[in-house]
Image (cartoon, rainbow, N blue to C red; front, top):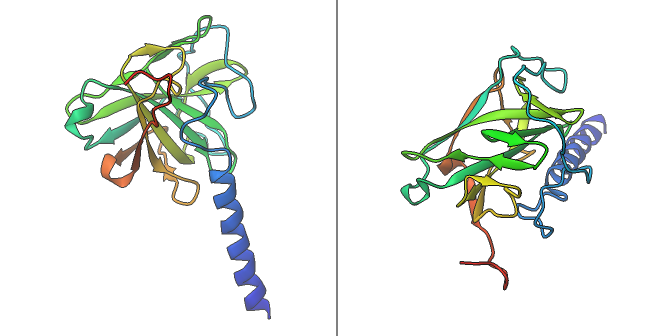
Length: 197
């Protein structure tokens, strides 16, 4: 009986993790904005240059890390990438981009070159972006776009690749990790009647 209840507990735990990782996590939202999970939008100030002590009890070095995607198909060379990641199980946000002007919300994205992209990673602490350097396990989605600077990196995306989920998170080491494109699932953005091809 104890063994059966333990198995049921494990199954329920996995079901909960899967539900949390997938609920409200549509690759493309219908709002065409970049609101955070708590319904707020980041405004004011410029990103900090200091390190982040990490999240979820997993402190890093304070230097700030990068996320690298390798093996990107050549048709995406010259396109731009924005990354969102959420720590498992805490759902703390981590973002990949070059820079952001917080007073205008203009985000500068990282360019894909020679089938690869390196994204500096950031986390938002009290409305200020600081470099991420933690050792967390994360669910990760990268958004591909045609423009380098945008106020809506998710809303303007032409596609997205889910590189990991809450069931198969990627673990960072001192804020850095690498994943091959072939390990993800790419989804082109569905074209709405108002979208330009």
